[in-house]
Length: 283
Ligand SMILES: C[S@@+](CC[C@H](N)C(=O)[O-])C[C@H]1O[C@@H](n2cnc3c(N)ncnc32)[C@H](O)[C@@H]1O
Image 1 (cartoon, rainbow, N blue to C red):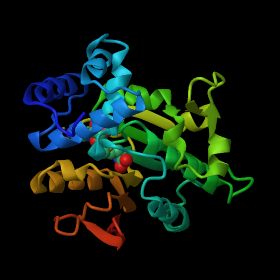
Image 2: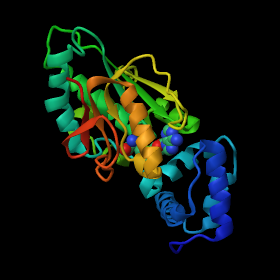
Image 3: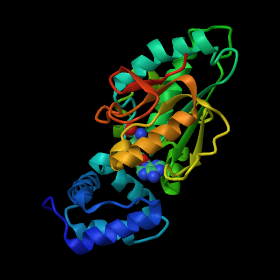
């Protein structure tokens, strides 16, 4: 297959993705969709698009997972465990100790983390692993935390809740954590692993569209991860979205953005701290 798809195929996939996920791919994403198709076909050992079409459009229920995998295979939708790993180091080494010191977050009250635009859940479970590991610094104390994970797409959230990943997707998890937090499928023919129940219990998945006027969250967040999403939107929408995120944060809370998403030109109450890490001004 060459790296292009015709107009008819693009439009068919585009409207199907919109119908299923509520995501409207702009025409500029055509080549990304083509590269996603190519990757999925390669993974399934397929050469002809017709074969893959049958998988996609053969059966309304079974092809749901394949559509999620196709979206995930598109470069701009791809997510992974421990993506931009320096940010998780910053989380454990700087943000969490600071939030404990100033706000008692996690110790005298529950620490609230929001994985906003969580896609298939890799970011959310990575945060959960980092929090669990961090809690071990406080033996004898019950470190209390909860993670809200949201996305616009219900089927993507279903995938995230189910927490079953191809083995190749878990490669980016450090070995010690992989052993602790993932269970390999007993069926050796299936190259799959599932996140352990204790980690899944830390994450509450919920459907939420960033475009609604107010998010209506019950808790103010100590930490928000909103990475690799802002670039979908124009500058004004980005500014509105970031300010809405700030309205749902405690003063002194941390916002993690994607490395290619600079918020410096937006009018927001955030102070840059480290590459793509911001703090809501407070004192
Ligand atoms: C590239 S993924 C980012 C995943 C993860 N945050 C990361 O950095 O790896 C972008 C996600 O944003 C979600 N999204 C797109 N438009 C949205 C909207 N209006 N409201 C909420 N989520 C949206 C998509 O469904 C997709 O799962």
